[in-house]
Image (cartoon, rainbow, N blue to C red; front, top):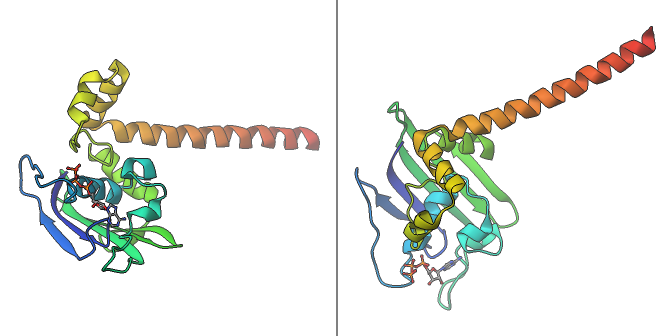
Length: 193
Ligand code: ATP
């Protein structure tokens, strides 16, 4: 998939609405220490469904909301909008919003959706919160030191088959449920004989 635009509001240090245009090709973010480079990358991961506060360098997910400074009060919500296109050139707009005390909500092309729907989209698009296309500081050394199984996962994501694993786990769950239902049915039928 192609990401063309990112809009942030109240996300970490981006207290004022900020829009970032992402041109085709490789994009690098440079700037002085503490200016928000990692926060930007985290915003991309977050809107794609990242749910581990640790990978957001936070104690809890609400910590991504602007916490306030000496001169500015904290915000009540954070919102990130990601615009782009799928490999089939369909327009894509994903919005994730978190409000204090209310958790996260997602919208896909203007419709309310579940976190799972967002996870599937990005898994299928060979991108997503853990995509090797998002290279944070220190990631290069991590790739070099990765175990063979970890490297295989990176290749599977790049090859676009990670979504199939998610669907397989889903299907296996349904199969197990159906088998349990069948066993229960057999028990009931045995009781009727
Ligand atoms: P470095 O080059 O040192 O790694 P960086 O450019 O990657 O820095 P970030 O780590 O993205 O910078 O940003 C750090 C800044 O974001 C800090 O000033 C921190 O106070 C601020 N920050 C992080 N979370 C929040 C929050 N919830 N509310 C307000 N500010 C925040």
